[in-house]
Image (cartoon, rainbow, N blue to C red; front, side):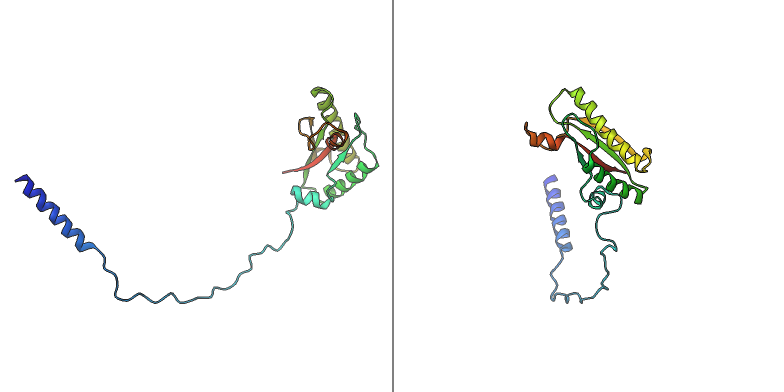
Length: 171
């Protein structure tokens, strides 16, 4: 008896599902009519990098956001002074922009010595910017010593690139 009941239920379920199946339409609907949406201009009204961004800063100072030092030195020479004057002009024009001056050293010397030298280099750049009228509270300093070289190698060319102070915009 149970087998007959189960078979009857299975047959009734199959018939019920077959009745729910969709049949293909005899004719396909027409394709949607083409509509022309109004053209809106999505290009921004300003071009170039956003004011106050690192890219805007670097473009405005013509890539002079890095100054270089001689071996074991942290004094500002005439080339460094010109670069820092350009940075000061930018910072004077955009008083909402703050920077961090990163001090770096080459791989020679101890870690402690290079951290101290990087700090002196960053502070030297900061002090020069302050002497040009930039508020000291807009300029932070940090020393990375020899920990973040831009040029790998143990030669004078690589060392010269790594003895630097880099001005970086902070938000």
